[in-house]
Length: 129
Image 1 (cartoon, rainbow, N blue to C red):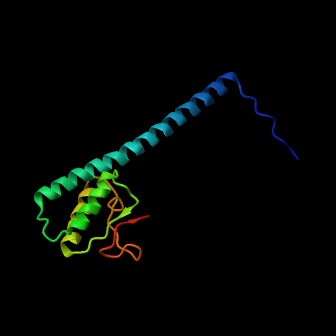
Image 2 (image 1 turned 135 degrees about the vertical axis):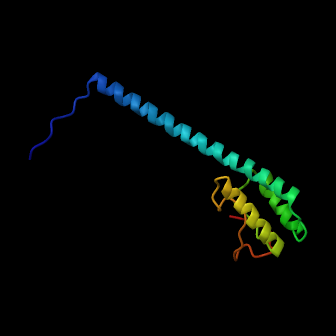
Image 3 (image 1 turned 90 degrees about the horizontal axis):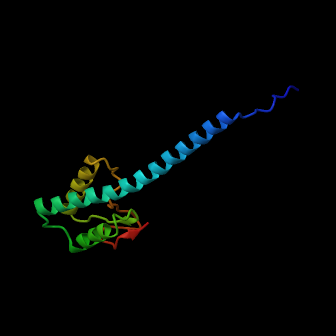
């Protein structure tokens, strides 16, 4: 069996590799910071959309419980663990508007806290995932 000779690293190669690793670590660290900034920015954009919706849309048919749950979502920094289930036809229309506005700002439709399931049926207290 033929074996390859051991690889020797010259000083220049080692310096180059070390610099490349340092740059890669810096870029990864910057990506993580950008991700955190984007998470906070999404909440700001969503809060602004919510303010606009409240100022421009008729809130008749929106239950006080829905508004309280939604405010809790905002107060918790757009906590992605919350699920709020819209119940009335007006709430469903409102949720559609908020989802479209958030997607127009580059967020995924999963950003919004609206979901109904067996653990969180219509009218239930918001579930924490």
